[in-house]
Image (cartoon, rainbow, N blue to C red; front, top):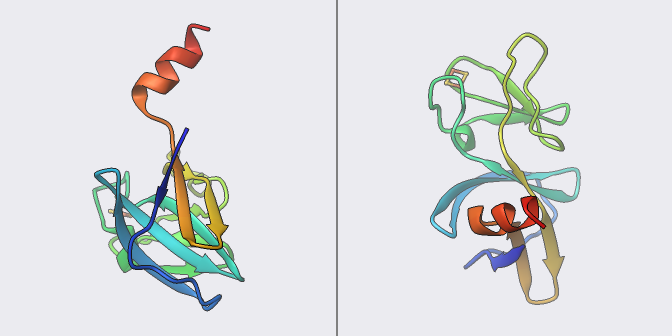
Length: 112
Ligand code: FES
């Protein structure tokens, strides 16, 4: 896994939703109840931009058709039969980092 620092970002502990680009991927960062969650920013239903949505009861809600996804697991609500990718987050002294595993790293692990 490779850790990428989010540029120009400081966590204040306040709630937020923000799109960032990390390793050429669009990531939806969610500040919720004092923690930060990193999720894919594209809704799997019809491509809505999840960073334009809102968070309620631990779920990120898409602004287009209001599908919702658990910010801890990425799992869609029952009946949606979908999910969004989640990424580990570390808050370090020098900033906030997101962990990503490349396709090559996953491939190597699968054939160990
Ligand atoms: S595009 Fe997100 S719910 Fe339809």
